[in-house]
Image (cartoon, rainbow, N blue to C red; front, side):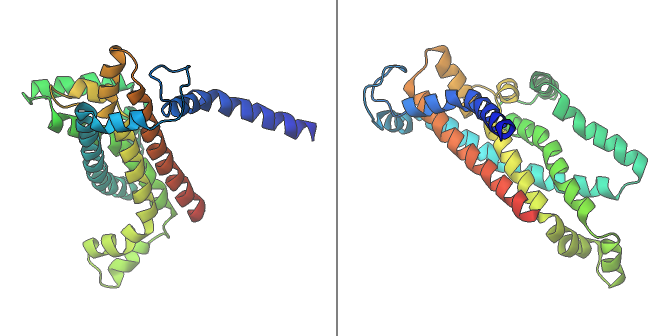
Length: 256
């Protein structure tokens, strides 16, 4: 009993340490006053100011559009990439899995600088397109890792059975394989969407003038002094990301 109580207290302290700053930020996003730490009363004033700020709304539009496109494209590429890796023999499969894991272990600044150098070498103008390509690039490995476990859980020789029954390879993929791995596809798409919204470093190095996502906009605003509008924006982003994570966890729980 004492051991269980001490364990629960320990876990409570860990989560309190992690989430107390976020709770503080969310509470003061409803503060009528301008300065955090000085409560002036409950108000939605800063949320109204937030949605009237053209720069933030422009950044929100770029963020959502890039996140949606990056998640869709990276999921499609990752699906076929995962299936190709799954069908390979052991040695090339392990080699490609190692290559796939390198971007996950790379610091974001290395990936960002590398992509920027590549775009400059190719004489591509930094802007919306280069940021979109960068987001697709770093999302693909996560999608592949989300789909591969579902491919391994498929019954063995299910594709060969479909081919023996007269299905073409394309029909076997879309009518047999895709329904089996669909939970992994959805999970990979949600993870890609969340990662795209959250990214700052890679976006910072691959964007151009006039194209900013929310993370870059918040960074620019913070350098001029923290505005309560950032609290409101951060609260909305936290709620959205937390909602996506809850959806992912609920899906995994249902599958298990």
